[in-house]
Length: 153
Image 1 (tube, one colour):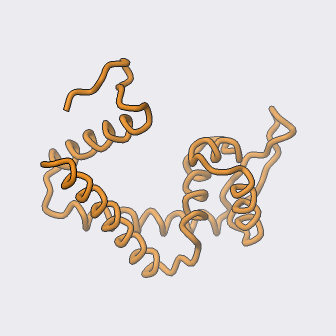
Image 2: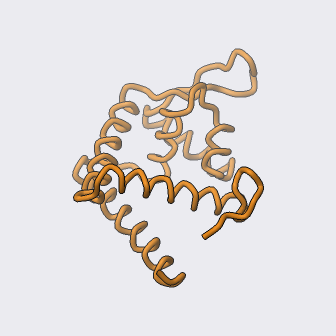
């Protein structure tokens, strides 16, 4: 496979997955923007989640993140709880409504993954996950693996 066709394939795969997610989000009648959904996912997955931990994980501007968190608080999808170790920060938790949205989103993601992997064996899926993880690692560290050596193609 040439570099151009790999690039095209990755681009088409990304857009196909996004289309599947958008269709599922519409079917589940989730009316939140993707950025808010991503923040809800972080809060649901990060233990003792803080705004700082979300900003680091999502590589998000702190000002924009603060606005997103305020919007999610205003629509009662998240609550802020005092952080006993640091009075300047708060733990972010999902409300019951936030948990319901996240549960719907998990259904959408499972359906999208199921649709896109239909006909693939579990071995093929594991291989794809391993290769995609290596590619993401390469994009994060400039092409060197955790051992500090250049990856072979």
